[in-house]
Image (cartoon, rainbow, N blue to C red; front, side, top):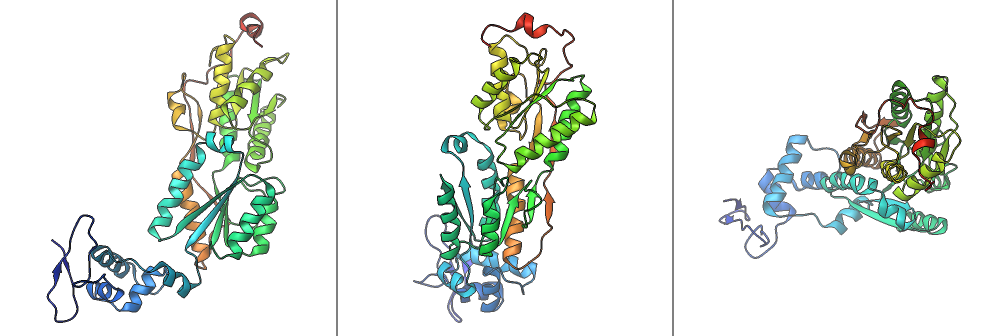
Length: 377
C-alpha cells in the first residue's frame, strides 16, 4: 500500500483508497511542499510543471506528476490562473442550426480528441453554440474580453469569413480547421480534401462512369467549395464535363431530395459523389424507393466516414478521417501557440479512401432509368 510522506520527523501515514481524500499529513490536505518532498524536488519545480512552463526535464516532470497523483494533490486553479495570467481554457464557438448540429456526427468525435489533449494539460473546453451572426460576434468578443479563454479552434471556415478578421483584430491564438482558404492567417489543421476528392472521383472514372454528379454541402463553407472544385477538376482532367450538381445541407433528408432532382434530369448520372456520408445514405434510400439498385444502376460515394457507413446496405464507399486524431492534432497546435511556440502553417491529418460495395462498374444500358424508375420521381 502507498505511503504518504508527512512533515520532517513525523511517521509516514498510509494512503487511503476509494472515495476518501488522500491527505499529506494527519488532518490536512496535501500541499505543494508534500509533492516536492515526495518527488525529491523544489516547490518551484512543482510550480513549473503544473504551470505548463519550461525548465523541468521530462523524467522529472513525470516523477512530479506521479507524486501529485499518489498524494491526491491538485493545484489551485485560481492561483494558477493569476500567476500566469491565463484562463487555462480554450474556446470553440459553433454557429450551425440546431437540427444540423444534432445530425452531424463530426463534432462528437472531434471534441473527444480535443478533450483528450486538454485533460492532459489541465485545460478546459468552453463550448458555445450560437444561432446568429450577432451572437457569434458577441461570443468571441466576450470570451476574449473577459479573459475566459486563451485561444480558439475555428471550425467550418467560410467564404469571406468575418471571424478571421475579428480574431486577428482581437489578437487571440487561433488554429483553424482546414481547408480554410488562402486568406486565413492562422495555422490550419485538416485533411487534404482536394487530394482525397480527386482519388474518390478517379475511382468512379476507373469503373467506367462518365456521368458523375455531385451533391455538395453548404457552399458557404470552404470545405464544401474545395470538394466541389476538386470534383470539377478531376472530371475535366479525364475529358468529362462536370454538369450535374446540387447543394445540400449535410443531412440525410437533403441527400435524398438532391438525388431525386438528379434522377429527374434528361441524362441522369450513373454515379453520385456526396459531400458527406449522411447525404449519401439518404441518397441510397431515394434510389431504393425508385426501384434503382446500388451499385447496379447508380454508384454512390460519401465523404467523412461515419460509423454506420460500413453497416449500410450496401456498405458505403467513402473517405475515412480519424476525427479524434484531428481534434488532438489541432489542440496540441493551439496549446503550442499559447505557450509561445511555432507550428506549421499547414498540418495535414491522415485520410484514406475506403472502397466498399456501393460503387461498381457503370451500367451498360443507356435506357436503364427510363425502364426502371417509377412514377415517384
